[in-house]
Length: 541
Image (cartoon, rainbow, N blue to C red; front, side):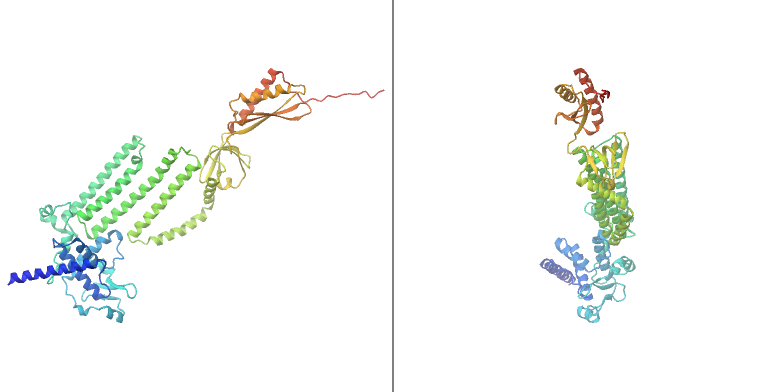
């Protein structure tokens, strides 16, 4: 009779599980009923039981296990749990609460308020009799009732208080310890079973072998990172120019190690509870730190690669703009990562960033001159009145070559070898003569007077030849000669030639003057002195 009863019980259990699995498959999008404390309590007991039975049924469908777990987890208010550990906390809450309820007397279903009673009474909170476990309303009417966030926070405490009590009839015995002391697929069950008792025993919520595995995992990770650091330093001393070796290897290695360590600790060693919360928080923080590090390195190396590939001068404004764009982009991405990190841990980052915005306004007011220079640099970049290497003349009379155009100032090298730094807010508000635009050549004019009895054809030929033989004169446009005026003592000619660059103007005039004197002397062309003929007339008759 006992065998027959046992077989019937097993058959009923199997049929119940099969029927429930069919219902889960038939309505896969249906969530747990949380319309009242009674519905929430019943849904949790139902789906946590299905989850337990599916775990021990070798023929269960994976979707049944997944759906039952998700619906049981849907009975909890996890709003105060950081997203980084929410999945683990949800599963542990299901198992802990089931262990607790299987050890304490439970109220009759009729004693738990249903939706109608909760509405009439305006019920916002219901507590399981003789416990501190609460089910509260979330949101306004109609709302839903969930095990409160305070209950979720204290489940470990409640479990420790009742774990010594015996199970009630039909309890899902050992479901929590079976979970927390289990391992992943990388660690065979036979290996765990062969360990001594002290390693399989629990210490602060973890088995001894789990503590040992976690410590070894962290030590191996730190040693691996240290070895990569030593290798990176060695390559840096060799002067390696590869991007991987210049700075990305360390942050990328750190990111990879954080992911691997978290995966092994969470899914293979199966660290749970507060220890998992601490480990996950540390690893996620380290991962975000390494991510920000990698982004800043990319923001520093990418502009160098672009500037080098396009053969842009380091001191040019284009190079400054490229560097600025990448730096600003890197900072924006880093801020987004920090915002995401804070949100992931449930920190009030919105208020922090709002405060930072107010501080930014104050800083902007205090640094208005710096901002004026910055926007002056932006104006120079957009208008392009000059570039690095151009020869310019300012309103103040300062003349020289533009050595660098930065986002805050422009540096000008005068002919006296003096470097002048001019704020961009100033240089954008004065008249600028760019002698290198639109072409890099500059016209040079040399005037010379010849005697009235000179052969003008020889004069013009000598002047033109003086310019043509000079290396500082360009061939296109060609040099020219013009007769300017008939002065009192001479016929004035002007030689017009184009210098290769504006900054050789003075040297070119010097060379042309010497060459003109030499050729005039060879051709017998006289350059007359200013003279005045006086005719004295005798007034006597």
